Length: 229
Image (cartoon, rainbow, N blue to C red; front, side, top):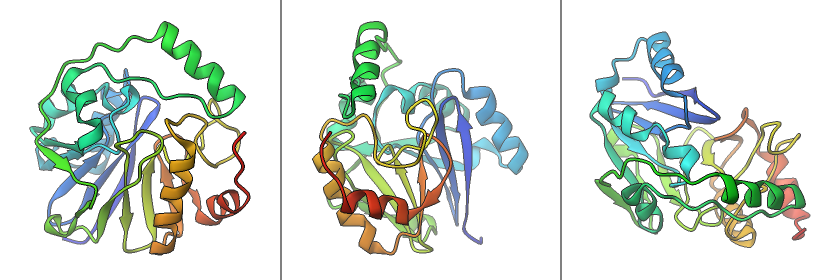
């Protein structure tokens, strides 16, 4: 089977369907997103049972709110990095800190109003710091450990120059008006170091969890002039 990947909006979170010899779904979606997930699969003419693995870029609530429903629909196993495993298995993920002034406002409000109590789910595959190859799925790429937004964050770097980066970057109006670094992160310096790690891997196009894809030159420029706000 020829490799393809598709963006499927699930609530405010972009999920990505990767299809090679086997299929992987990246991330588990935000609240209210199950109907759009089901529609996305119908539009692509994909049987939910085709998806064998749900690979989480990280464990924050907006990436796992629909996870239980999607797992029930697909029967897929769940993979997440060791440091974010507790978020899935307790169903009570923490909210990240704000990096910018606006980010700090969002973080404070979310921590006050948002108290996630999601169904605890068993993690089947723990992603190590060394990452993992996607070649066993017939997908030309690898999972790379990219801590910073959360300390268990991972990204998918594909051989064709596309990178699915979760919340290593943001490009949606309610977060930031132009694409760039996240406004929320446990450690923004670690985010920058993670970008320095993966940008030399041939990344040309960045696909974030929030907003549309954009050219890698945007992040390269921002990293070059990075200063903590």
